[in-house]
Image: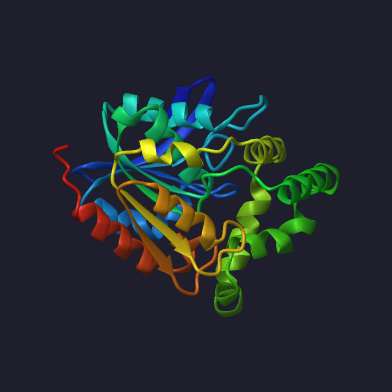
Length: 267
């Protein structure tokens, strides 16, 4: 997978397949490997650009504050390097927050949206306080004591009960995230702006997907997004929490391909 320098940060990505392009954005604390179950089937039909967001995976670690719009610019820089003018932006959680802001601020670069387990609004005061406490704790004693709490936010109860190996694997990955990058990312989530009132500006077709057991960004948030977008459909995935691409990979892949196959790529 190649790297590029974008906005002072090294961004790592995978570029596979051929056909109409789509770009994948992962959840906070994850990496492009979160989309591993989807990349192969998607690449049989489409060109798939799978990005490790700044501070995650094989991309560069962070030392300076940033915001979601900087993350939009990172993706645009990757698309520019690949000479891709327009793509379907796929994003889970913070990846979906980035995709929505791309559709608002650079709509000429967005041919469609797939928004998975995400939120268009600001963070709640309770979660801001929780982020602050956890951030201080991670800085003081490290990530390991908080992995159980993080896993409950990331995985639904069905997955934790029926697929503990998956949870254990990703707990180790969460623990490997660079702590300064994690703290800066938490601040981005805590301080994000609301785009709820701007969703009606988005003309691109959109698929909204959410796990019915997502306690981190519950289904009500996705339903709000779907109802505000002028050209959208909603899929609620049973027995899935926040990381639905890993928890119910077949259902997510099927919903994505059905949506993508129905797009008019000539627009």
